[in-house]
Amino acid sequence: MALQIIRNNIVNVEAEAIVNTANPKVAVGRGVDLAIYEAAGREKLLAARAEIGEMIPGQAAYTPAFDLNAKHIIHTVGPAWRGGSFGERETVAACYRNSLWLAKQLECESIAFPLLATGTYGFPKDEALRIAMAEISSFLLDNEMEVMLVVYDKESFRVSGKLFSDIRTLIDDSEVERTVASEPERRRNLFHEIMEKAVPAPQHLKSKRRETRETEDEERIFPTEESVLYDYSAEYNKSYDTFAPPAGSFPSEKESLDDRLIHLDKTFQEHLFMLIDRKGKTDPEVYKKANIDRKHFSKIRSNVDYQPTKRTALALAIALELSLDETTDLLRRAGLALSPSILFDKIIEHCIETENYDIYDINCILFNYDQPTLGA
Image (cartoon, rainbow, N blue to C red; front, side, top):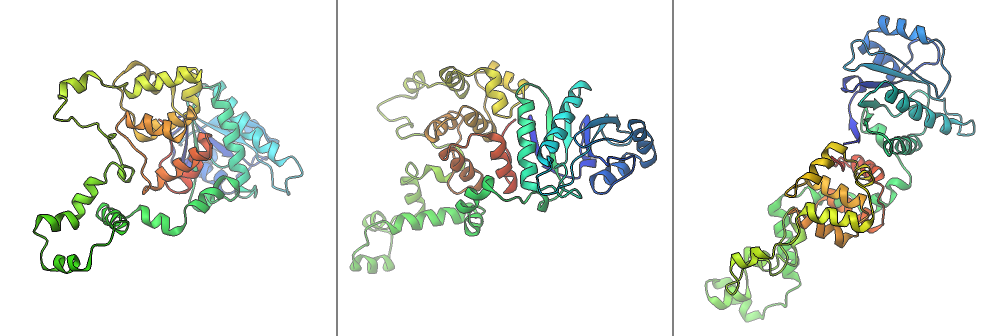
């Protein structure tokens, strides 16, 4: 995955370059700066930092990583927030941009960032997140590198603004609770939903039901939960997590299995590359917009029987800006489906319906709701 958002202490992250929100002077600061000095070896790192000297906001420089699980520490100086009228946003953008280019010069394959300047410097978290995503995604359009945005705790990622407002409106507390219901509970809810729509039985048959349910008529009028869910499975197939075959997809007595196998449709891989050609996209355009690394995409390209995870399939659908119907069709070719009772699926469905095809925005939303992010 080209860009990951992870929750951890940055000193525990394994990457070739770890970015430090540095003190402009040769001194140990607070927050991330202090944690990195303590983990790397305070005296050794301070001596190496002294060779760089005083730094200005937006600048990036590097030292060895010493005792950290990395090769380099990239030090960058963020701005103190003074209301936004003193070039603070441009300076934070320069911190990300200069750190990424320095990592490229050092031939790093991976780099880990904290959310820069949001600690003791007081930069607003929602604005910092947008700037980080913009600069990292712009860099990844033309460069290959694994980038990690490391968030220390849940509270530090609770941001406000347009990015999450629509999702918060869509998903209230009761909806979130419903998505974690057990499968038996979900099946019971579906059964009752179906039966509520049915024509009420005559009173004398209701009385008969209390006496026995063993006759053929009674079974027909008062079907069991299993039979109702089976009969309505085509209409309600989105209530299930994975494969939902289209109507008429099962072999009939009039058509043999061998006959049906002759008419197999395109595989996921074949259909994917047909869509790429139809959309006029190049491979790099697709895998970069899908947050998929080049090696993984080469694997997809070379294997006609490739079976994606749901996260990878949806990432590709987002990259190709498919409609909801087109996304559903692509998923079914891999034996997958979107479910209206799963929070992850509902967020993705909402983003597609509102034509939000920025995978980094979507991943921020998913991360905020403790859901797995898209890509591979």
